[in-house]
Amino acid sequence: GDKPKIPDGKAPRFPKKPTIRQEGEVLLMECVLEAYPLPDITWFHGDKEIKDGAKMKMSRKAIAKDTFNLTLEILGPTREDGGNYRCNAFNLFGESNANIALNFQGGDDENGFAPSFVEKPRIIPNEDGTLITMRCVCKAKPAAEVTWYRGTTVIKASSKIELKSTEMGEDIYELVLLLTNPTAADGGAYRCHVRNEYGESNANLNLNIEAEPEPEGEGPTFVEKPTIQSKDNGKLVIMGCKVKA
Image (cartoon, rainbow, N blue to C red; front, side):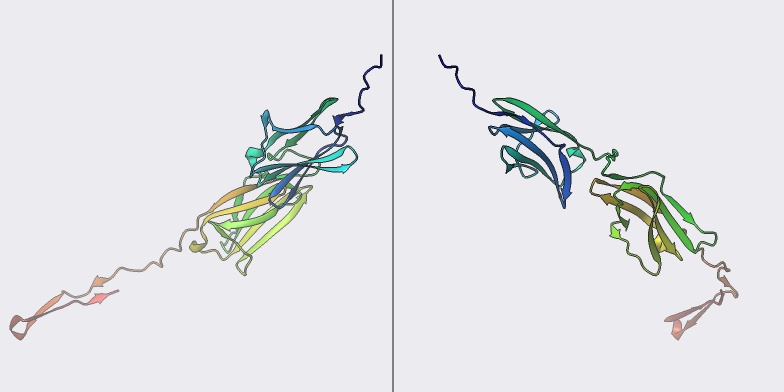
């Protein structure tokens, strides 16, 4: 008798390396899949299956015959979202997995890495106290966007404050805040915040400026013995003192 005809099909396969990119607040992981018939797609974070929700959304789009673009969107990714992701595709003819590592720890990826501070932040006053330099050294690829804060207020460049970023070597930057004619009012908690598409970091500096001592002088002294006078039959008493100060 005739043998049953085996329908033509293709086991799932991922012909390209998965990609990760960021668009604003959304991180996109994308895989290209070839398979026929359309397989079941399951995404995992570690061993945990990912469900569609407000934070993570999964989609697929046909881009050619038996070829699909699979996307996992992560809204507002944080360090907790780091780790290993896996896209599993399964049909009658087989199954395949695409693996993606999402690293927020500044692991060096050829495309880039999150900023990190490679030296302890320093506060360097000049000799006569007319200039204070706050210096941080940061490693980042691509170059990080730098924001300085005093407390919770963003610091803007002014006649008193100069902000500089200088590339010292490959992917290493010196970030400097120059404070001219500092006074006690400039003291407080400063923070250098750096971020790029791979992550962010902060360096904290505490600036303590002693208030100028009061000019020295002599305390007041009484130069004559106080006097007491009675007037108007004792209804009014006048006390008099002479003071030198």
